[in-house]
Image 1 (cartoon, rainbow, N blue to C red):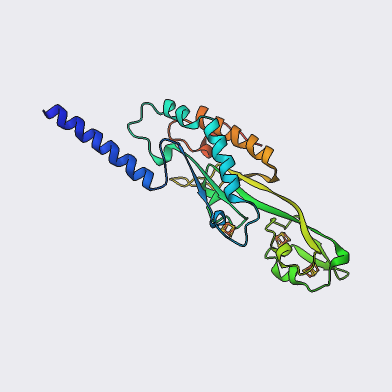
Image 2 (image 1 turned 180 degrees about the horizontal axis):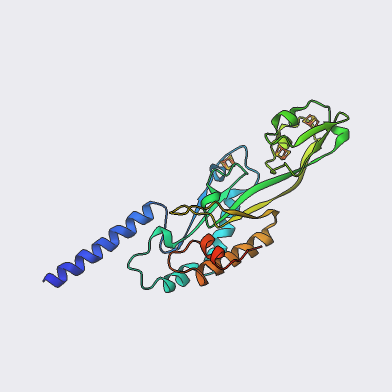
Length: 231
Ligand code: SF4
Ligand code: SF4
Ligand code: SF4
């Protein structure tokens, strides 16, 4: 009777822990968690389709069989907890509202502008809009300093003519951020990458996390230990 009671207690406690973890947004059946910014619903600053990128990322994670591979690796752990899972974020623009800087892998939407001088009416709205002071007027014509530009796309939205338009929309990839005892902000692996490059780097990151990570090690710690880059 005592043995049965203890078995029941253990099962119940396992069930409650799983439920608590699921409620906090982590699912041990999936073994990953993607935090999305409000851009997934509606945000005027969005430069990428957060919902679409989320679908593609989820498919890649499932195809990689991250869940069974991690379960196999963590077979000796009593419980699967949030810190065992692969943490991701997608932000619709460089404001990074889904906290990409503290995730194992994060995607941030970027927009590179281009200028067609003959359409410029010299209103200077782009100058006052750019928070990075990346736009200046040269002989009444705007010029962008791409060493300062962070590809937010604000100037394109502010321009009343078609003088500023989209040169490229792409993804900034950030890898290796985490909190904990020794917090570390993610490193930027690439700017303005396309989908193919994004998927290539994501697959590399999954491989390192699953195959090289020791115990509860975050991806950033593993990469640091192995002195490895993902680009
Ligand atoms: S990251 Fe950009 S698109 Fe997403 S909610 Fe924040 S401001 Fe909006
Ligand atoms: S994209 Fe953003 S940072 Fe770059 S020039 Fe335009 S407003 Fe400035
Ligand atoms: S906002 Fe457009 S039209 Fe106005 S100065 Fe800038 S590029 Fe020219």
